[in-house]
Image (cartoon, rainbow, N blue to C red; front, side, top):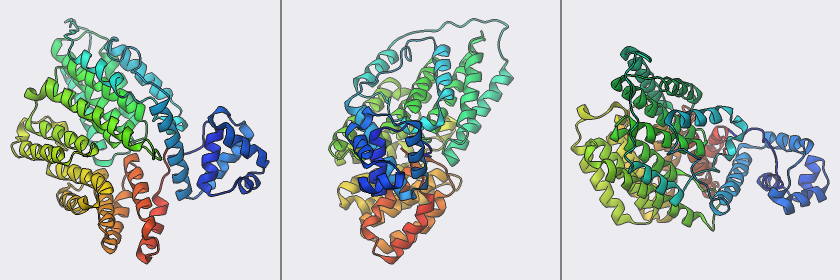
Length: 475
C-alpha cells in the first residue's frame, strides 16, 4: 500500500500534481507555497530533495487524493523508477550470492530485509538483475560441482524436529497459495532465519538434507510473498536463495521450480508508463525468462515429474506470447497439456499440487489475454480458457480466483461484450475483496483503466464506482 513517502523529490512532486490534474498555480495555492517553487521542482526533478515541511504537505495531499488519483501517481512513480532501473543502472547480484558460504548469504539477505522500512517498498522495483548479469553467474554456478562436506556429530536437531520444520514450511506455502498478499511474510522469514541458523551446526547427512530442503521451500515462499507485497528485488534474491538451497539438498524439481518462479516474476512485471520503451523492455524480460526455463529444462529435465515439466512449458509459452510468437506459444501449450495428461500425482512433490488443470488453462488464458491487448482477435480464446479455469478452480484458491474473474472481465471488454463484462464484474469485485495480493491490486487497476472508454455506459459507471473503494495505489 502506498503510504507516506520516505522522501519527496521534485519529480515525485510533479507526478503528484499531474495525478491530481492541477496546474502549477492551482497546485501551489492548494499546497500554500509559491508557484516558482513548483516550477523549480519540475525543472530539477530527481536532483532536488524536498525539506520536511514541504514533504509533510505533499504527504497530506497524497493521503487526501482519490483512489484513482493515487493510482495515477503510483503509476507515474513506478514509471520513473522502471525507466531509471532499465536505462541508467546496471544491477548485478549482491556480492557472494552464488559464491558465498550458504548460511552467511541467507543471513545477510534476511537481516537486510527485516531492516527495510516498509515505506520504502514503493522503490523495490530498483535492483532487479536482468540480462547477462542475471543469467551468466547463475548458469556458471549451476554447472559447478561444488560440494559442501557433511560432518556427523551429536550436535544439531533430530529427525522429529526436522519433520516439524518441514510441516511448518508446508503450512506457510499452503497459506500463500490460498490467500496471497504476503500477510505472513515476516513469519516465513523468521522461520527461514531459524532454519538457516540450525544449518550452522553439524548434522547427519539426512538431517542436513532435510533442513536444507526446508530452507529452500521457505525461501521460495518468502520470494512469492515478497513479490506479492511489491518487493520485487527481495523476491528475486529469495528465489536465488531457494535455487542454491534446493541444489545443495539435491532436489532438482524444487530447484527447477525456483528458476520458474524467477522467470514468472520477470514475465509478470509491469512497466508502467514506459510508452517508448515498454515493448523493448518486455521483450528483454521475456528473453531472460525463456532462457531461465531453458536452463531449468537442460539441467533437470530428465529428473522432473510430468507435472513439473507441464508447469515449465506454461512459463515457456508465456515467454513466447510476450515475444509475439503465437505458433511457438501454441506448441508450448500443447506440450504442457500433454505432460499434465500423463502426470501421476502420486509421484509429485506436494508443493506442485497447485498446478492442476485449472492452473494450466488459467495460465494459458492469461497469456492469451495479454496477446489480446495487442490483437483483439485473441479475446474469445482468452475468455474460453479463463472460463474453464473458473469452473475448475478449487474454492480455496482466492488469489487465483480473483485473477481469473478480473481476467474474464477484461477479455469480455476487449471483445466488446460490455454487458457481460459488467455481470462478471460483480463476482470479480467480491473475489478481489477476499485477498490482499499486490498482484490482484495491480490487475484491478489495469482493469479499472480498461473500463474508462465505456464510462458513458450506465452499468460500467456503476461498476467503476464499486471498484473505487478497492483500489490500492501501489508503486
